[in-house]
Every structure is written in C-alpha cells, then in structure tokens.
Image 1 (cartoon, rainbow over the protein chains, first blue to last red):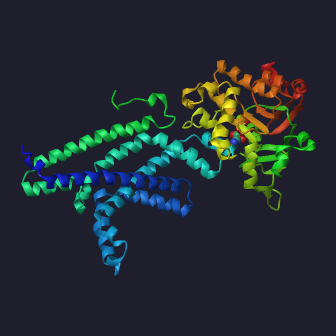
Image 2 (cartoon, rainbow over the protein chains, first blue to last red):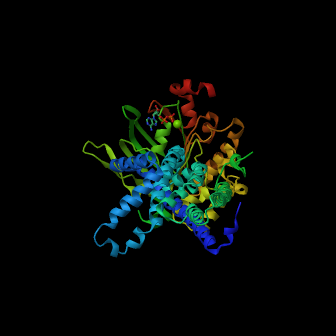
Length: 241
Length: 265
Ligand SMILES: Nc1ncnc2c1ncn2[C@@H]1O[C@H](COP(=O)(O)OP(=O)(O)O)[C@@H](O)[C@H]1O
Ligand SMILES: [Mg+2]
C-alpha cells in the first residue's frame, strides 16, 4: 500500500473538490427533488386530468429507465443539442448549459422527483381523512389544509423512506464522473491515471463514502426523531437494536 | 352582517334560534339520507339527536357546518341565512365560499374519532384555527388556548403530542379546540363512542359543564341517560325523518321511540 500521494496538494485539492461537489450535488438534488416530488404527488392526486396523466408519464419514464442512461441523455443528448442552437453560446444561460454540474443536478432532481413523488403520494393518501376534515370544519382554506396539515402529516408518515432514499442518492453520485464532473470517483480516477495506483485511491474514496453515509444516517435519524409528533415507539436512536 | 352587530347582538338577534333548518333533504347517490328534516335550536339550549345507526344523525349534524351540503331546504345558522346557489329546479348546487369560512368560525365540531392533528402539540391544535382562520396573534390565541385547556383540565399537557394522550384526554383537547374559536354553536358527533368505558365520564363531565354554562349545543349521542339529563330538546331520528321531538320526557314517553329506548330504560 502506497499512500504517499496523499501529501500532494494537487491531489488533496481534487479530493476536496470532489467531496464538496458530492455534498453540494446531494443537497441541491434533495431539496429540488423534494419540491418537485410534492408537485408530482399533488398533480397525481388533485390535478386536472391532463396533469394527472403527465405526472404519471413522467414518473413511469424516470422510474423505468436507468439513471446512467438519463444522465447521458441529458448531458450528451439535450446538452449537445442545445449547444448547436444558434446564439446559444453567447446567451446568458450558456455558463449553466456548459456546466456538467447543471446536468448532474437536473438528472438527480428529476429522479428524486419521480421516486419520492410516489412515496409522498402514498403517504398523502394514507393521512386519515378525518384530520383533513377537521381542518375544513374549523374554516381552514384548502391551501391551509394542504400546507399546515396534509403535507406535514404525509412527510411525517414517510420520513424514514425519504431519508433512506437520500442515502441511496449519495451513492448514485459517482455516476456523474462519467460526464466529467469532479466528484470523488473522478478524483480517484485522476490519481490512478497519474500514479498508476489502482487500489489505494479507490480504497480512500470508499472510506470517505462510508464515513459520509454514517454521518448522514445519524443526522437524518436526528431529523426523524425530532419531527413534531413522532410516535413514542419510533423513538429509537439507532436503526439497529 | 356588520361586525359591530356580531359583537353586540341586538335583543332580537340574541333571542333568534342558533339554528333554523327547514325541510332539509340530502342524498348520497340514490340513497335519500335526510327526508325533509326541520329543526330549531334555540340560543343557549342543548339539543340531542338520537336514533339508530345509519338513521342520518351524523349527516344532519354535518349539514350544520356544511361539511355536508344539503340538496334541498333552507338553513339559517347564527343569524345568517345560508346563501345557497340553486338550479332552476331549486336544487342546491353551490355555496358562498366567504360565508362558508365565516360560518365555520362560528360553528365548531367535536368528532367521534377526535381528529386531532398529530404533528401539532396540544396547544398547537387549539390555537391553529384561532390564528389562521380568525387571524388572532399567537399571543392572544395562546392565552385563549390556555384558558380553554384549563377549562377541560388539560392545561398541564399543553406541550404534549396527541399520540401521548389517552382517548379521553384527546377528546377533551378536541373540545378545547372547538371552544377556542368561541363559537355560537358547538356540534358533537358521538363524542364518547370511541372511548374506553372508563374514559367516558371524564368527557361527559366536561360536556355537562358546558351545558350548565348555557352554551348552545347540538349533540349526537348514544348515551341515553346523559341525553335525557342535559338536553332541553331531544330529537329522535328514524330513517332520515324526525319521528319524535320535544322535551326529553316527552320523547322518552313517546310510543314511537319506546322500542328504540328500551335497552337504556
Ligand atoms: N359520504 C357518504 N357517502 C355515501 N353514503 C353515506 C355517506 N355518509 C353517510 N352515508 C350513508 O348515509 C346513511 C346515514 O349515515 P349517517 O348520517 O352517518 O348515520 P348515523 O350517524 O345516524 O349512523 C348511512 O346509510 C350511510 O351509509
Ligand atoms: Mg354517525
């Protein structure tokens, strides 16, 4: 085992950039994806018929095709197509459209939107009707019932599933190394190409992933435990007994 | 109606019944659940609705805050005639949204299954509607909420979540939630039917106290002794029709509902 390259500030820089990009991508995709997911769930439950159909088609397409194929589709397909549009290179959008981070985030947001959208839809359907009826009976508007009662309750019900999806998402991030985005795997690839060491860089990033997963799991567990009104029986610190 | 009139009702308004329902008809699909029900609830009195399961008691009660919209009939609640939109046959097809919000702030409900909001604390449940529907500040709503939690004996659990309370405690919180809106009319739909037998009395005790205060209440219940004791008026509903109504003694003596009452007598 040769870890002498770790002292090279260039490699440290790559690894740090890869780590920051990974977390940043995770954050942007989770936040953006959950907002989209709520929209998808609402569209399917309460939307006018065309929107119900659209949300269903979106969910089916995203869940029915591999994430890597979607990533290539957006980056090499849509991205290169846009590149060819006259004037695009001079437009204000160009910095965004030429950035692989944009396509990585877009792909992940759509993915989270589709998967979590279904989870949230199921949770919204399982909120007891009486609770929402009580909201209406006390004069809350439809929108107030939605954002004060229905959504918080649904998220309370499916929180463990949502946090589980976020952990899975973290481990999908290395896919973006295929579109030249500097993530941890990309950093390891560069180090391997330059030092001819195969195992050591991979071992290091595996360790970083493992540590990040453990920290993230504990953080999300903390969120779950502190979610308002969580039932007493679910108040267990570690998922292991 | 102007707000000054609401704050200081004229003598005439004060004596007007809290509810005047005239010939309410309600269908669910082909099933006619209310077959022309007329009912008056005088201000400051308690009316209990009794009857077999499926006779339409809940539906009638839920018409009073328009959780159910009647198909025909007239309804005046808390000095306001409800402005229904009707088609050319006179069938009710719509409601005035503004009036609906206003009505629901004045008529609140206690449900059989409590229907507390589990992600809000006890106090959070009680101040939600006063803040968001009546527009009270958090401070004022909290003062009001604490007062009514005190009233039902739940002030010491204000920061607990509903899942940590017994059924009887949850229902008392639900009563505080209904009181905190300072409504003109309180509706109860079988408030003790989902409770363990040993928890029934603590809830009935609270309701009895409210009756003694002279609150206007409309109550669906299977607790016959209790209904007889607290009610000024008793309504016996049979298959969507009022089969007997009047003072509790009159109704209990009425041969038409003798058979129904028999188990309780
Ligand atoms: N939302 C609904 N849709 C269809 N049928 C209903 C609905 N609510 C009540 N019903 C029917 O109307 C009848 C009266 O119901 P309800 O008013 O709940 O009776 P009660 O409260 O006296 O037991 C029952 O036959 C019931 O099945
Ligand atoms: Mg009922």
